[in-house]
Every structure is written in C-alpha cells, then in structure tokens.
Length: 182
Length: 173
Image 1 (cartoon, chains in turn orange, purple):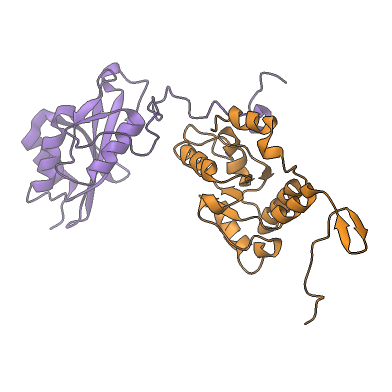
Image 2 (spheres, each protein chain N blue to C red):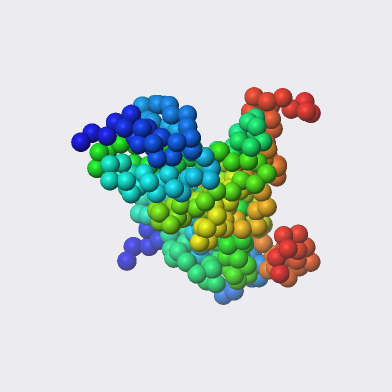
C-alpha cells in the first residue's frame, strides 16, 4: 500500500521524546473536532444549490472531514444556513439550533443568511445573527463552492483553537443569554 | 360561437342595471366595476349563465389606493376566464377604508379560498363567509397588513445598510 496518497494532519505543538508525545488537551480535542465536523445543511434557496455542488464529487467537502451530512440536529456540529430566512422561518431555525448538542458552530452562507441580502423587506430576517450566534460568514450571492469550503476551513481554525472549557464559561453563557437561548 | 364584449356588457346590464358600471377595455380585456354588495350575485351569474360560462376564477387580489375617497380606498379585483370561448374579463369592487368587507366567493370557486386568505393577509380586506379567514403567508404574530401603503416596505432592523450606496441621501455624512 502506498502511503504518499494518504494525507495526515500535522500534529499539534508539543514535546516529542523516546516513546512519548506530550501536548495540551485543548489541542488534541480541537484537532479531533476540527477534522470531523458533521454538517447540518439548512438550505432554503440558491446557496443550497451551491452547497450541493460542494458536497458532490467535484468539490467534495468530505476531503475536510465532513463526510456525513447530518439531517438530525442532535448529531451535528456545524449548522450551515444557506439562503433567505423569512421571519416566519426564524423560530424554526432557532429551534434547530437549540436542538443541536454542544459543541456547535454556525456558518452563515451567502448574503441573505448574513445580512438579509437584497431582501430588505418586512417579511425577511435581516441576517440570522438576529436570532442565533454565528461563527463564520461566507459572502457571495451565491458564493462559489470554493468560498463555502474556505468558510469551513476558517471554521476549522476557530474549532482548533477553541478552549475545551469555553462551552461551560460565563462568557459563553452570556452570549447565549443575549440571544435568549435557554 | 364567439362571445364578444358587447354581448357580455349588454347581458350584465340587463340583469344588474346600475350595479355594473364603467365598462372599459384595458389591454384588450373587458373591465368593469361591480357594486361591492353585488359581487357574489354577479360572479354567480357569470359562472352559471348558459351564454357567458365563465367557468374559471383566475385571480382574486387586493389594491390599496390611499389617494382615493375614503369610501373607495380598497379594491378587490377578480379575473375570470371562459375556457369554452377563451374569453377573459376582469371586474373590480371598491371598499371603504373604515370597513373593508366583502362577500366571500369561496362557495362558488374553491380556488378563491386561498386567494381571499392571501388578500386578507396583505390588505386586511375581510371576506364575509370565508371558511377560515386567517393569515396564510405572513407569520401569525404580524399585527399589520404589509401591502397597505402606509406600512413601510423595508425592514427597520437593517443594520448593515449605508444609504449613500443606494443612491439616497444619508442623514450622517
């Protein structure tokens, strides 16, 4: 078996010795989380079509550890909101977010999810960050699959550097409280 | 067998006299006004008369004319289609702003059920006798009727918008 086709992620910083390797728990947990993000696609319009291309063979988001689309929020880490979210849809999006287990991250894909896009109107939510916290915003109308992949890679950087204690911290609780979640 | 507009106009005027008025041809379609309290009878006649046979209700929609007199501010527009002779007509009923209510035609055409709910949702026009008159597209919590002209179209909560980039004067330049 040739091994040169298998790509391995780099080991985190640490001390290498005879028969041991010492590093921080944060780094190991972050590495594991970042390279096995299970996406929950919440697609409502054209950005969703771009995401379908991102999932499929040409762009293949599975290369970055997101092999399995989870259509159950309980088994997902990364909520990808793609498309216009109307105000009528907002409580449903919020419910999906609340059902996800910690740790969880959110990517707003495209202009509509990020800011409402061209739909500056009474019926459309002006950005999903009005109802749930967002980690990464991907611009574009719609963004190309490369941009969505870039957004996922940037989220991986956030995940890698996240402290294992963050989800239990006061700061995080305040963030959720500011959105009236829980 | 062709059904021409003169025949339609004469038949309606003989049947309803002054409840049908203002016959005019707009974009090659016969258009007229019907007294708001006669909409059901006129539509029923258009549907069931053996010569007219308007068997299909294409559309029901509302219009708001804020500059009209108070008794003619809201308008309900009905489009009907005769499939046998392929003739289309349109008629309008004007309603007062204080009590915009009109008889539902859902008993004549089931398709009116959806369209009347939509018109209620956006204009607040009440269709008397409608089996389930509640909001259909907007969220239930909405307290206004968004397509009335006094209601702002744009969302007030927009935070990323600089009016200068939209060709509008900004208050803080």
